[in-house]
Length: 129
Image: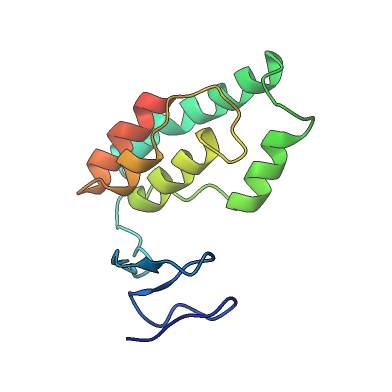
């Protein structure tokens, strides 16, 4: 097993972290999600709620710094299409639970990341909205 040094790309499932401690957790690297033929109905339901949520964050002055929401969106990239439900769920979790936190939503990232299906991840992300 290979020891990773700072700046090395991930080459092994086991490596060293910054303080030199051993980590024995495995990481599963996923392939990019293939677009489905039809839009996911749950994503279609959530899309207008995302816009409503963003408007509420801005109108209620919940950004910790001016432009925080725009910065978060620039880091996350564009909203994935309804034909990519996993990607949409992960994007949504990053939007509503960013670091540094906005402090406006339940912590959903662990549940979304550990979901067994796109439908489960979308359900959890929807609760966060």
